Length: 140
Image 1 (spheres, rainbow, N blue to C red):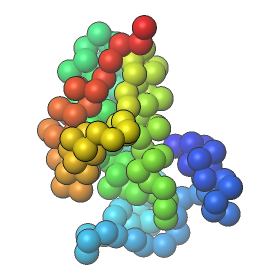
Image 2 (image 1 turned 90 degrees about the horizontal axis):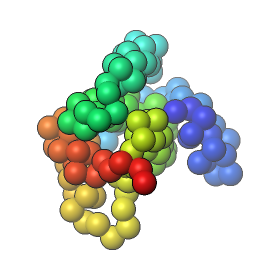
Image 3 (image 1 turned 180 degrees about the horizontal axis):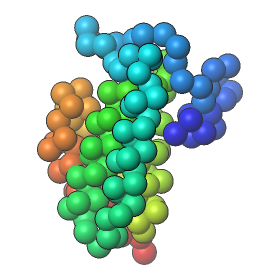
């Protein structure tokens, strides 16, 4: 995730690819405290291991685990800026590992955008899981 952020934003931010060292929030809701980042990254690593054990043909469980990962990463919000783009690319790469295509940012698709935002803002794993299930497609 750090490397994705670095590659995406290295020409914009000096701190691209580095976790934030300041506390931030949105809409009066704080994101995960920096003092506990090690715990959050360990949890995310566990979720990734669980995801990797899911059979590539089990679309429902793949979508659910990707939704859990998205929710955890979004709450962590490890960067000062660029979290959403980094999250979407990270999940896209995880889906590719299972031979699937996942585009959480299709151009001009208001429905996907609204569902994505509702799920991430509210921490609604059901909404995110349903969205990812609808968008997850086998390659080829």
